[in-house]
Length: 215
Image (cartoon, rainbow, N blue to C red; front, top):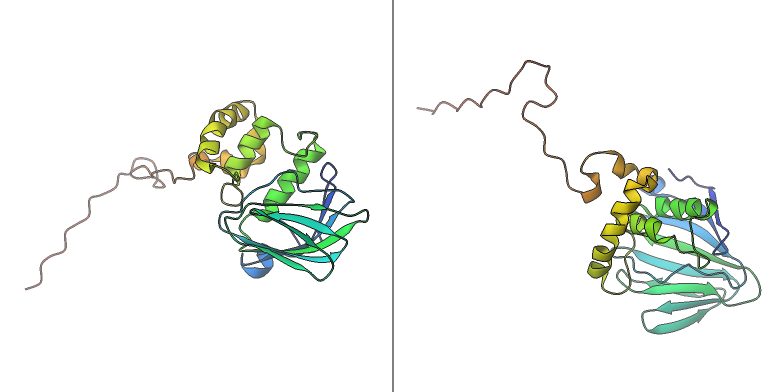
C-alpha cells in the first residue's frame, strides 16, 4: 500500500513520483503526488483513463501535453485537466527538470499501477521506450483495466492481448498481481459458492422451511 512521502523512480522514463495524499488518506477519492521529470523525460506511452480525471499543475519547468487532438504547452502556474476517456501523453519540453503536481480522482488502483511500472523498469522488463515488454504489457493492461486503456479500439486491444496474457501467466509473470492468486480473479467475476461451503464436513444445507400462512 502506498503511503505519504513514498518515492518511486522510473529510470527509463526519467520520472520520479512523490506521493502526498493517497487513496487510504481519502477513502479512495483522491491520489495526489508530485511528478518530477528529467529534461526530455516523458510518460512511456499515450493512454486513456476510462473513469478518472487527471489534473496537472505545473510548478517548475516547461511541459508539453497532447490532450486529444490538441497540443498544449504549460509552464509554472498553468493547469491542464484531462477528463475521463480522453487520450493524453506528456513530456518535459525543456532543458531543466520539471515538477508537476498531479491529482487523480477517484484514486482507484493508480498507486499500485505506478508501483508496478517502477518495479518492471527496475527489473529490466521494459523496452527502450519505457513500455513493458509484450507479455508484461498484456498482463499489466489486464490487471489495471479499470485505470488505463488503449487509446484506440480498446476492445480489439483486449482481444489481441488476451493470448499474450495467457502465455505470460503460464510463464509465471503474473505472480506480482494479487488478483491472479485466487480462482476466478482473472475474469473479475466472483466464483460461485458450492452448496454447504464453509460448513463442517458431513453437514448438508437444509432446504428453507416455508413460512406458515397467517390466519
